Length: 243
Image (cartoon, rainbow, N blue to C red; front, side, top):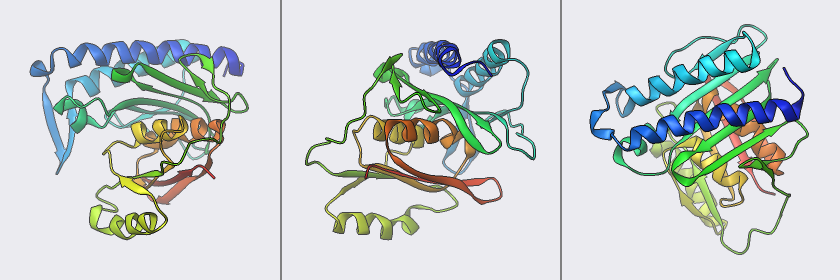
């Protein structure tokens, strides 16, 4: 792995390329080939093309290494070291023309995310961070801030491991604390929005490693409190909040 600054710049370049590729598909959605992987879970030709591009670019930029991606699989080995990729998180939103989707690439060393980037292409945002660098937005350092004003919004995720009805009690608990509760159906968008200070936090139990690998380090470097890790075989939980 390169030095932190060089690695961030290299990753930002890769992710900008992925964002541009994904955006090109938004202008020709009618040509997408869509597969329903399971009930309510979709993959499109855009997901596959973006993941293939990321795999090639990361290998060329950072050297051979383990990669796991939502669409093309793989594994990071017993020490959990390598890249975890989500080419388009929020595919349903993407297919419907909603801008609430994102691209995520996180590097993990022995189970701990150390480098990551999230692109929100339709919003023109690219978040990145490495251990100790702080958050960067579109390549520029973003200073820590604890002033988020009086509006309190918490985002929650749901999935087939912990579906909506099971998250309703959590939602009510936050409402009781004065929060509005939203569910954007995209962990990557929600976690990036929280890192930007636009949400009070995000919680999901049962997501994939590729959903949280980049967001973990990004939210930490933004100054958030983050608890994340495996909760079942192939399933991960994340609780990222502002204090």
